Structures are given as C-alpha cells and as structure tokens.
Length: 524
Image (cartoon, rainbow, N blue to C red; front, side):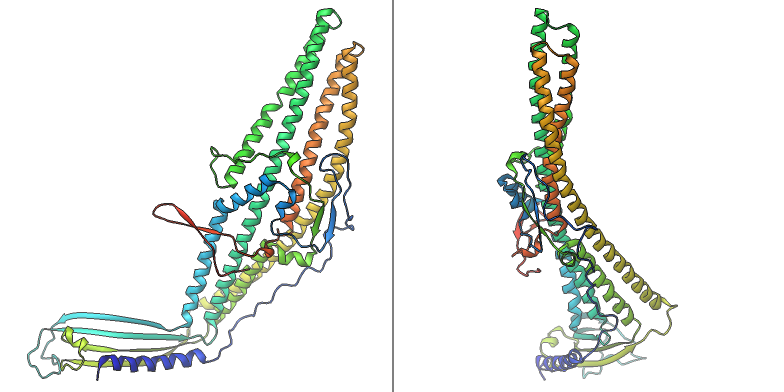
C-alpha cells in the first residue's frame, strides 16, 4: 500500500474522532456574566441643576445652557472654534507615544485571544527520527527481515501525532471569555488614553492662552506705571512732587515687573508640555500659539444621564471588562477541578533505509499506528485547586467593588465639573465687576496724581488693585474654557460616535521607522 494513501486514511480516522469531539455539546461551568445594573439615580447634584449659568459682558462671559440627553460629538474640541487647537490635537493623536503604546498593548491582548482559541482545534504534529543502533542478539533479534546479520543498523521513523482534549466543562471557553474581556478592557484603555490626550491638549492650550493673557495684562500695567513714573519725575523737576513719591512709584514699577519672570517661566513649561503631548521634543516645540481671544466658549453643553454615563465612560467600561474577566476565571478554576478527557492518535512508518520512507513497498520497513483515550482526575493535591477557585471568587468580589468605585468616581467627576461651571460663571461676573470698579479707581487716582491733587499712596493702592482685577478676569475666563473641556472629558468624550478606530503606528525594530496601520476589524 502506498504510504500517502495509508496516511490519508489515518488522518481521516483522526479527523472523524476530532469532529465528533467538537460537535459534542457541553455547558461551561462557573457563573455566566451579567452586566452590572445602572445607577438608580437621575441626577448628579443634590439640588436641581439650573438650566443655564450666569453671564456677564466680558469675553467668554455668555451664559452656558445644559441640554439633558444631548449626544457628545466625536471631535468635541472643535466646539472651541480654534483652528490651532484642532491642528495640534490631530497631530498629537498621530504622534503621541503613550496613545500608540496603549494601541500596541491592544494588539497583544487580541493575539492572546486568538492563541487561546487555537485550543478549540486538535494539535497536529509531525516528526522525523534518524538513529543508528546495535542490539544484543542474545536478548533480542536485530530485525525481523529476510536479510541476516544486519547489526548495527540505521532506523528512520516518520510519524504524525494528533491529540485533542475535550472541552467538556468549558474550561477553554471560559479561558477565551476571560482573555476576550481583557482585550475589551484594553480597548477601553485605548479610548481612555485617547480621551485623556485630547482633554490634556485642550486644557494645556487654554492654560497657555491664560498665561499669555496674564502677561499681556501685566505688560499693560507696566506701561502705565512707567508713564506715571515719567510724570512724577517731571513733577519732581518742577517742584510739584517730592523724592519719596518718585521712589515709591519706582518700587511699584519694579514690583509689577517682578511678576513677569514667573509667568514667562510657566509659559515656557506649558509650551514644553504641548510639545511632549504632540510627540515632539521641546526643542521642536508646537507650531501653534494660543490666546484667549482665539477660543470661543461652547454655549450648549450636553449632559448625559447617570445611566448613560456607565456606557460612555471608558474607565467604567474598562472596569466592567475586568469584572467580566474575573467572572470567567471562576469558571476556569471550577473546570480545573473536574476530569479531563483526552484522545490521541499517531501513525507513521519506519524503515532501515531513508529511501524506504519514500517507497513504503520496500521489505525493510513497517507501518504503525495508535489510537488512545484517557481520563484524568485530580484525587489529592493538598487543596490547591480548591483554594485556587476560592481565590478566583475573591478576585471577582475585588473586581466588583473596584467597578462600583469607578462608577461612583465617574459620577463625582461629573458633579464636580457641574459645580465648577456654575461657579466659574459667577466668578467671571464678579471679576468683571471688580475690574470695572478698579479701573475707575485707578483712572481717578492717576488723574489726581497728574494734577497734583492726590497722595502717591492712593495711586499705588489703585495700581495694585487694578492689576489684581485684570489677572482675576483672565483666570476666570480660562477657568470657564478649561472646565468646559473637563465636562466633555467627564462625560466620555463621544468616542462611540467614531467611525474608525484610532490609527496605530507599527515600529520597525531594526530601523526605528514606523508606518501607519489601520485595524480593519472594527472593535467599536
């Protein structure tokens, strides 16, 4: 019989056994995962949220309106109407190494799932063994062949081995379920990194704009102080002012100028942060610059219900998948305590001549095969499997409490931002009123000093108050913009409206170069 024909028959028998095993029904042991119930609350704050914030006549001082149930746009940062911000965020999404790292980790998790799924199919191996040996003729014949005195001799063996372990208790199914949940967890980690990156870039850009606003306000006051110093020096020359008044104004000018270096330092640090977020080195720096006048305040703000929040927040979804994985691990630990059923088959050909493996009709060779089945049950292991199952159950409890903590933290996050937005609007209105009053006081004091009708101390106090008022207005304007971005982040950022997954760059280990990979298997 031709060896190829024999091998095909053997494989057909083994395949029939495996097919029967695959078609045999089984019910996985362990708990079936159920999605946690949504929070039984319908609002975030103890008191009813006002439908809109207060307003004032300052830039970014318009009232913001909360729209219950409105969906969040995918690219929510475009609501600030800043081309520079749009460009910087798009570049950051392409080049940020932290985001790219989380996407690579997602590929690792997916491949782990595929690897575990391979255990649903039989293991098929083949080998070839070549030996030279000599046997003791007194104890056993050399070979049962017509040729005599063939000792020592060569022996060549080729064979195919097939084995399969029945997944009777669903151990492998639960293992795949656990790994798939971990892959889904990593998918939401990608979304969390995506959301954190976009929010951090937006807030960093707003902070840069606020620092530039404070620097501009300080420079404006420095210019006014210098003019006043020039006036006082002229009055000193004509006898309308004394030397102490001039010295006081010089000290005031120096004090205001001393506030500039810390602001410039903070601006430099902020620029370095923006460069790092966009995946650039500080020396390359971001190309964009940001000013408060170039950022518009979104007026209609979406507000999801708490029961929607648990579906929208990536961190909550990631915690849910960890809970799912822990649930499946209880099933794995339970199945490990039950019997394992395995079947195996192997067959091949032996010959004392290598060419005989190709031509099995040679006389100095033989065919062989084996079919076997086994059942394995752990009888005594010192309680190892029992304690492993108890540990899996405890890990599930741990994951359940961690999920609850994440949900509570998410609701707290939204509530904090809502409180901030309301008070930011009130703070800007108060700061604007303070600025108007301080400007009037400063102008009057300056006019009185210029005409020689007021003491220098009155002017110094007015100058200091006016600078404080200008800075407060800038900070209040920036706070409204930053907390608006924080609201979009707290509500989940609209990732569910994305059509395609984030683009991943695969590094070439040899050259360090990269190219873009788009996963065609959408996981949204």
